[in-house]
Image 1: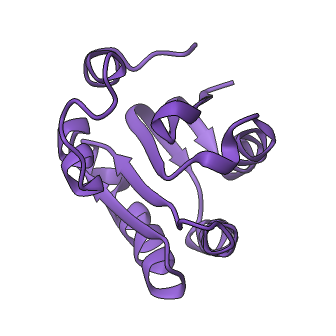
Image 2: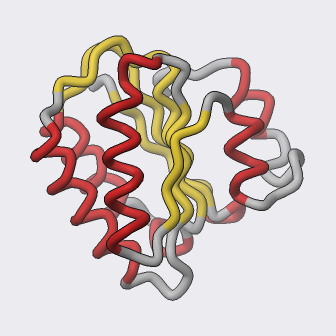
Amino acid sequence: MPISVDVYPEQRLLRTVYSGSVSVAEVSAAYQKFLATPGAEKVKYALNDLRELDELKAFYDAAAVMADLVASDGDEMADPWDIAIVTNNTGHYPLLLDYASRIDETSQVRCKVLPDIPSAVVWFGLEQDAFGALLPELILAPQML
């Protein structure tokens, strides 16, 4: 699967890494996997690493449906999620910016498209060492686990 999902309850972190070519159906399946993962209820920070993503096979209407689902679920949490989408592929920006905007406008969940992991950590409002030993791995080596 071109999407890996890891939950780190101690850090309140969800890490999702996308690579290759990804469809909306695969994004939906990965999201359901996250929700079913032990510790998912503790997540506050969602770090979506799209740096290795070559192709995002999605239309705006499908992305909007996914955004509405994420926004609704995030609003039900005691502490709404902060979702950082990290990509340096400007070709993905229009769809991702629309997705992030829809979440921001329809919920208490915060969502932003950012160019790198350190920017995401700052946007979360955390210190650069907030994720401890995970941070070097997050920055240097997006990989399928």
